[in-house]
Image (cartoon, rainbow, N blue to C red; front, top):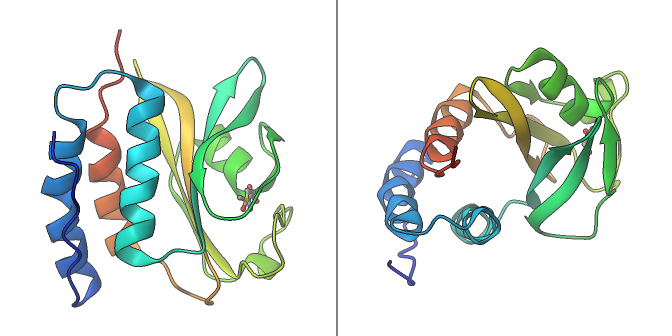
Length: 159
Ligand code: SME
């Protein structure tokens, strides 16, 4: 595996295109889920400086906080609650340009202004979500959705 990350400047697409093969190299040959989720968070946080980036994982009937980078966060989210719980329920990526305008948004930090949540699938079912928060309004768009989904597809999910 590659343990160093090369950070590039440029537009969002340039940054994701540089990061994607590097994350592939980080994950290559490693099947430990926690290790891989941790490195995906670290790579995204290091390249983009996102305010918060982390995983919530489905355990029984709720999402439980997993590997993340950023300030401490709420640990459990019910299905359908908040942006994460809705992305789980809908099995769809949600882009929230202004968290205060999103009904039911769960504020782990008042500094977070916009958010994107992407579901992670195993055997066709949502097994977790990736949540990325920004201190800036309207930070995320379809480019983030496209590349973050590509990154999540790189994670070996086991059987
Ligand atoms: N804002 C999320 C909760 C998780 S924190 O942002 C880390 C939500 O509404 O689901």
